[in-house]
Image (cartoon, rainbow, N blue to C red; front, side):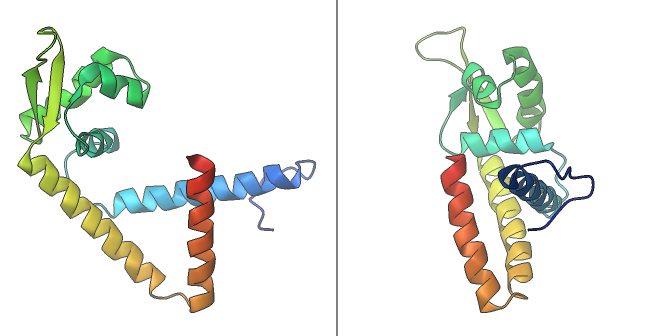
Length: 148
């Protein structure tokens, strides 16, 4: 099994594997974020756009999804509104509620970013042999299952 620098020998095999998988997933996530283009939004703002792809949401619901306080989500969404990536409206049931939804520009930014990231990753995968691709395919299914 692969080992990371600084791993303690007394860790169980499952703990050692967890460290290696965590490192690989975090490194892959960082690299994919970097390949997403030079948009002037943060990763958290990008995540908010992705949540809104499923439909409009209240600021409170977005804050709960991201496990942050509502005022923090308000500050996160404000630049997205200013950039025309989301629009803000009043809730229909409760006029005090703030609802945000994705605009065409926000949808286009998401599409472009995902395309860039997928193209980069496809290029990396294109350099692998069939056996490595099959291993990655199985590992991806396992990761999805254990993180669901």
